[in-house]
Length: 362
Image 1 (tube, rainbow, N blue to C red):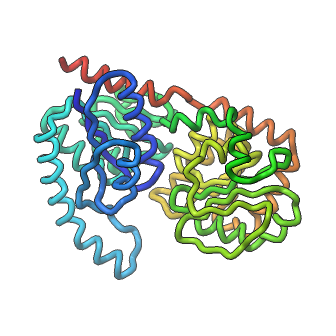
Image 2 (cartoon, one colour; image 1 turned 45 degrees about the horizontal axis):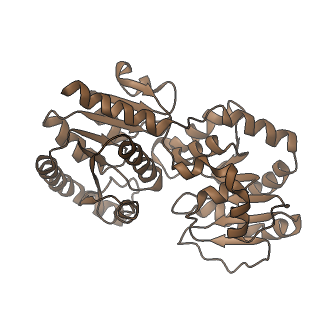
């Protein structure tokens, strides 16, 4: 069987795509090709996971009104036309049995080409607010896998299946590896630990909020594992703090954490639901249709997480962290409620739907 998986741009698209690929490989012998956008992180992360990838010369529409953004938008039609042609050639040459889109602008041309060639397509939408690319392609898709209820306002109801979001398998074993994680991060397993993550690229507001109130954290007696992203430099050093630009071993980090501070991307929320960690979410305001706030509110409304607005993070976040970690009853309540939202078999369910699509075409 030949399968194309397309999409990317951020870890929130890439890691679920890799999880789906791994589930497919565990079920059958398949040749899997990824298609992403040149210059984006999937061109590095997918080969590291053991899969081939081809890049399209595609970019998204810039929402800023800066001169640089306007220049990029003027080039968009030319890049789109070129990418549609490239995508058609990739599909024709590879001859896939099915094509999967995981969101992000790189998936648009490939799914469009596959649908024009009458090849079955499946969309995987991670967020509670559907992305533009997925909404445009949904009408001709054969099946749409989602993580949230109420997605019929974006997609044809008869094509929707609620599967949850795929996550890396090592995340599911987080509770089994706490001691190994403490050794790896050089922290004391007897002390409570705060984990701060801002997504694969970091989160400037969260970083600045932590840095501004670092003395409170030093005096708290708690340990800190802090993923800053590669573009944030800090000179802070403290024996109980482990500050890193990127955390590859997220299963160890989750295992060590008593409280997690995170953006509200779909992948992060899915991982938190599976590891059952009390969380404070700081939704990014720099995303289309403010979809991270919608993701976060889906948890807040079920008492499964706390929320701090990005605009309030510098004045509120650290105080809220210290208040939460000191309230064991609240931590337990958040943990129990977020665990109810986890779907540990999401990648296997999606893989089964993919195989069903191909079977129905034979």
